[in-house]
Length: 268
Image (cartoon, rainbow, N blue to C red):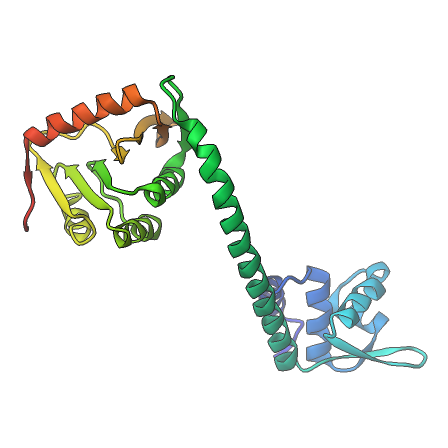
C-alpha cells in the first residue's frame, strides 16, 4: 500500500480526527508510519505539509508521544508503534470519561437540590407558559417532567413515539410506582407503537374520535401540550409547558371528557 494514494491518505486522516488530531498531525504521523525514518523536510515533502508548519507539528507529536526523534544533523524522526499509540489514546480517553462521569454525577446531585427549590417558584396562578422547540426538545421536557412525577402521568396523543429518552423516563417513574395512563386513537400508522407502550403504561384507552392534540398532565400540577406549525413546508412543533392551575384544571376536564368516550385497550 502506497501512502501516495490520496484516497487511502484521506481515509486515515479522517479516522485520526476521531482521536482529536489535526489534519497536519495526522498526515505527518501517517507519513512516518508508511515511509519510515525521515527528516523534517522529508516529512513535509512526502506528506504535502507546509515547511513552515512541519516543526511545530512534529513538536506536538513528540509531546503526545506518537513519534520519536534521533539527535543529530539533520534530526530524524520515526513513528512509534501505532498499536501502542492507539491503546494509550483509548486508555487516556477512558480515564478522562470516568473523571467526567464522576464530576457529572456530583454536579447532578448538587444542581438537582438547587433546582428542586427554584422549581417551586414556577407554580403560579398567573398564565405563565414556557416553550421548548422541536421533537427532541419536547421528548426531553417530557422526560424531565416524568422524573418529577410522584403519583400519575396522563398522556393524550395520536402518536406514541418510540425512543430511548421516553422509555428511560417512563421506566424510572414506574420504578417509583408512578401510574401511566394514555388516551389515543388507534390506526394503521400508530397501532404497533400503541401495542408496544401497553407494556409501559398501566392503561391505554382508545378514543372513539380523532385525537386533536398531544397533552401531558403530571400529578395535576404541571402540563405540556404540543403546537404544530409549518416552516417552508416542513412540519415543526413546540412544546408549551405550564404549572398554571387554571390551565391544568381546564386540561383535566378535557381529559375527563375524552375518557367518557374511550374504552380500555386490553389487546389487539
